[in-house]
Length: 207
Image (tube, rainbow, N blue to C red):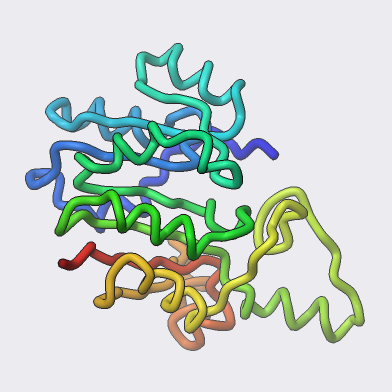
């Protein structure tokens, strides 16, 4: 599975870049988001991890610090958690639904992260109307990307997303991702859990 190389501008409003000196991203793909941060905020150190070697080669070709890391085999790659110790922000953008033990991974991040570190999580919202449409048609058709991505092994709605984030810290800020298209945003504001395809959880590591 290879996701398109597009910066995640949607998560930028969640970060106060004047207070950040380091950002770590798991599932960085080709490093587009980290590159955007580094180019705009030169004082911020960025580091990326991805399980695909081709993505890491591409990220390194852009001058980014990055390495191959398979979360499902995290016990053999302790170096990732060394980097986490100094991170002000940890990005987990549409990654936790792809791994076998997301709760354990988040707990490992909490174990190594410094107090006050911010974890930003985005997850697909399985309570979306598309899910109901599939179920009413007596079907579940997997796709290459999106909510029905064939590589998803976990599925989340609001409450389960909050429970997952609480493994890092107890005070979680939750929100949905709203479309920039006016009519879509109108529907999403009316019933966000039904019409929004993505969710965010923002949580700081507490003592």
